[in-house]
Length: 362
Image (cartoon, rainbow, N blue to C red; front, top):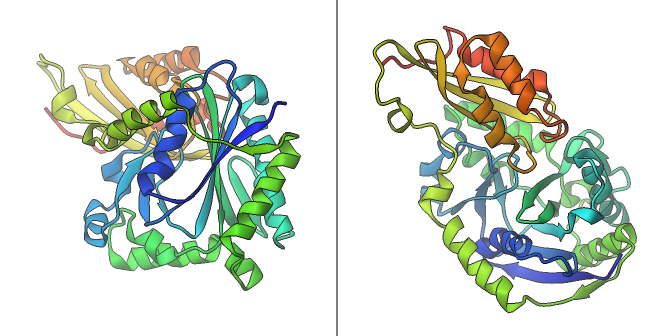
């Protein structure tokens, strides 16, 4: 493998911490080197996954009150609270340099953060499929992957310290009592270097060990580089896109906007959730006169390419469950949603179609 370009942003703006890797991926040309970006945001912010519905995941009023910006990334997964106590790594590479299966890619690239944690003293750190780093049953890091442009992107973090109360404060939770319980669960389940070691290694040491680990896993030297002019131009386009309200609210089901122009009978909107190994699935379907006229598949799972769009399109049609199942099967691509099976998607759509699901009459 050729040398890998290293873009070390150190402390950077929250916008740059999410937007730059999208731009580098979107600019990737056949002869370009693979790139690893390292960064820590100067200020805390909230970031939601590609397939999440903002208004069902994040307490927007709490974020406004706390002065926390909200961004949506192209990578899947859940809503997260990000700050300078986490060192983020973002790998942008050619698909030819990635294991053929998404599960294999997660396992391969996870080796570097695992080795970094071990070198820093967390000897029990290991990769836990589908997308976690763990130590003795506690989560010590999350991982994600996506296709952006022609590039494969893999992201994750090394957590030096974790503020569970702050992380719980931005989630959409019914009441404060439940919020306290969520925070307590996070404190018990999510770990960090500070918790495991009783101290917080310097950012410089963490960075050095992570670079060394990536060089060992990839078999390539990480050579400091800089952005090309075309990448800078693409970056500015991505900034405009990711700062727009349209992008932030891109995943949503609007009853008024999606309602068919002519409906003479009953209209029902059904919603359901289902927990799969790869994440939470949400299905929202509009049913009119025995037909599914619109469908939305959302949640904190990961997906490759346009798999979700294709599945949503396949769900539309007669609401007969047997036929829905066959349409989903025809559009299903194995391994496109890591940790989510065909049966998981069929189940959540079945639940949404049940008469008892959340409904709205028209």
